[in-house]
Image 1 (cartoon, rainbow over the protein chains, first blue to last red):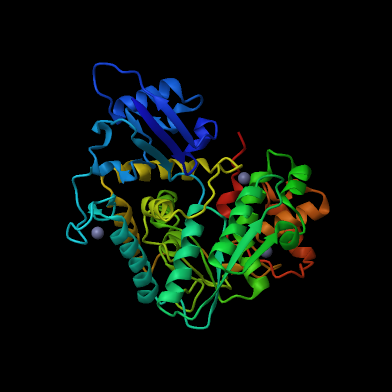
Image 2 (image 1 turned 135 degrees about the vertical axis):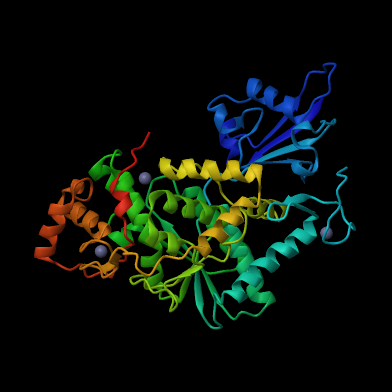
Length: 97
Length: 356
Ligand SMILES: [Zn+2]
Ligand SMILES: [Zn+2]
Ligand SMILES: [Zn+2]
């Protein structure tokens, strides 16, 4: 599955300052959700200090998630089922104002 | 794709976000309208500005001050406040650190067509942060950056003789400060930190010379970030070079945890803080004025003056750690600094957080 990941508001600092990444998730038999995407991100993209991005099975409180510009709170949050070419944006609200 | 529709335009448009204050789904357009309207209502209700005033918007290039500058500019025109707005930025003089954020502020100046004034630590204190680090070492410079940063805006605003300073403190910041002062049992600050305006006629605490206001006091950080994102505002985010105050950092995490459980908790904390009454008989710490710079200080000589004295005398450790004896000596000598510097009470900064 092809996705675009965006990191902003300081979250990009945890990903080598890369703001935009396109990724291809392996096709497995179960469908991908934000929950399983986060596990994939932790294993494949997060190099250092994963606790600043992921806590428990979710993003750290204070990091906003938008799916195609829409607040994930409107989309079932962690259980949102990812679709081909979705754009997932992670914005930190925790960095300097 | 999203099934929810906006509650504000009766489902004409699909919702884009959940507003944390009310947990209601809003579309982008209605969110912009509501966000701007609520800040306008706060400004009017709290009488933050008077026609003809010059307002320095504290601009760091970060999300809060960028949204503040954008919204104040917009509301000033939309509702004819009659304000003269200026962006005021402070350059600490740390090689490489401010470059990106000052570039952002310079772009903001073009985008919003507002005058920009950048004042350096060198101009304000006679010392840049790089020079201070050279003199005191990396281990101790946090004391300086905390104290100097805190009063830089006041010093700058005085230099420019503006009527007021507007800062980008948002609801999350205020809730955090309220909790921090409760945990510390700091009644004087607890009362003060809930005020939307300090240093004006209604504020009975002495010392602050230029009034400060916080137009974003009731605006959630989440909404500020989403407003900036949807409006494609140009802001800069960085990790602070200095390790954040660990105590404050823990409270911030706690607030964000609370928000996830119940988003209204942030505004609830602010309302609770505002309702607290201090018994008349409670002994409040005596507010006095620094003998050198005549700004509010709990000690005869304020922390900033002590630090500058140390730097100029080549004993930079002067302001760090046990200071009682030095303060007394300085008092005796009393060579007044010509500069009208301003200092808030910095008692808590005496315990220094070291860099990692
Ligand atoms: Zn709407
Ligand atoms: Zn510091
Ligand atoms: Zn002083």
